[in-house]
Length: 295
Length: 241
Image (cartoon, rainbow over all chains, first blue to last red; front, side, top):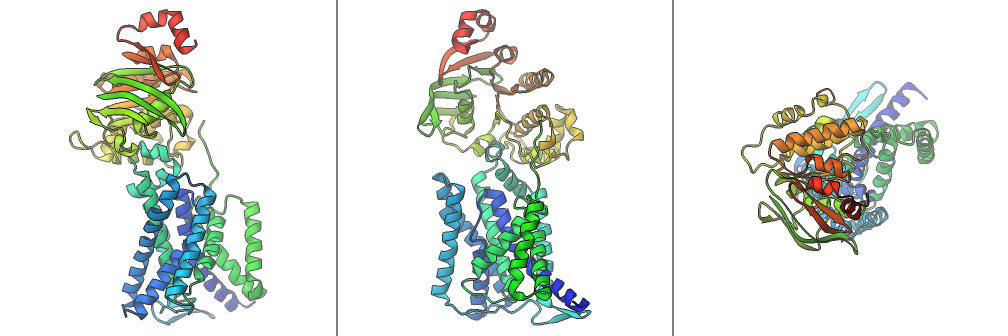
């Protein structure tokens, strides 16, 4: 493999990795905040991506406005999912498997709704910075990919600050760690769980509008992104939302290098084999934490 | 300050508390004593809003709070240190304390700044000054109990409920906790102390209610502690001692 090819695969891997990482970040944040494995996380991306497409194509909105509105729509979708479906299930004593089934059902419903109302066509979103390319040595990267990586990094840092420095972020963490302890500390646990889904919807939709210009937006993209995001989140350590980005980048790089060293047809096999090995060696994930308890 | 009338509560179909009535006056320390399974912790859970009562009323400052969610009760001055502490172990001590200070009762005068409130509580627990950036889960059981107490105090409670604060702790730590309760008492805070160790409860409480199988079966009135403790038949009958 030449140096140029390696560099190209790293740049591609980084770009894909940040997409997986953003989906995984939303998934891990929701898991962290509610202990729910959200099988519809990729469908927040579908909602964001398809909303941006419709606002651009049907309503002729400017790209930035369409993307911003689509991200907010993802947050709204997160709020509605928690309020209308998750919360009633929790009040009736929902268990981990019932939440998984619920969110899987929502994932199929969202996909079917997009198929019914928008159709089975694939839609491409224009990239931030148009179709511009930046040449790096013998490799090239789209300007949009650079934006994607920068936004991914910014989101990761902002979320870290949010969860460690703000009262709302700390309250969300506290509600997730010990709901009874949080409630008796004056924290509205139900509100924190809703906000967790709002955050998950927002980050998921952001991933959708950012991936839209790189692949096409279509009604089946949700489940595929969920699977990749789930792998990223597990790899990074599901208990640590920031680990999802690290897991996503690892997954993206392994896939990308597998394509140039073996074959694109085997990329998933190779990537998943390496992930299995990492999980056996580091069962808590790359950045996962071991539980510690004081005496 | 706090009045409970004919309270009934339980878990699922299982009734635990049956027709509980009690009251706690301002600046009074009241102990809830009784054997294992008497319903002491369920009573605390019902008072702080973690268990919804099936019947009866809970009144705080003569306002009914029976159906009020736990977080609202905490913010209006009903503080609690639950059995098992329920701290946010992964968070630092500073973050645990900040969260409590941020949600403190705000209805009695100006709420102090978070840093000022924490500094005030640290005067009661000086060892915490060196541990503010430590994850709480790394602290010892005794230290964690102090953190739970400090967190509850940062909510500026009018009534502080303590559920078995001495359980599983070394005698020296228990002594420190009881001494802190003494300080709070002297500051005029109303305290409900749930305690299995009757001698310990008698050290700090003005009065006591004895619970057995979910009912109040005896009341130790002010000044009656010596007679109650001296009467072996009473202690054995109610506490199985």
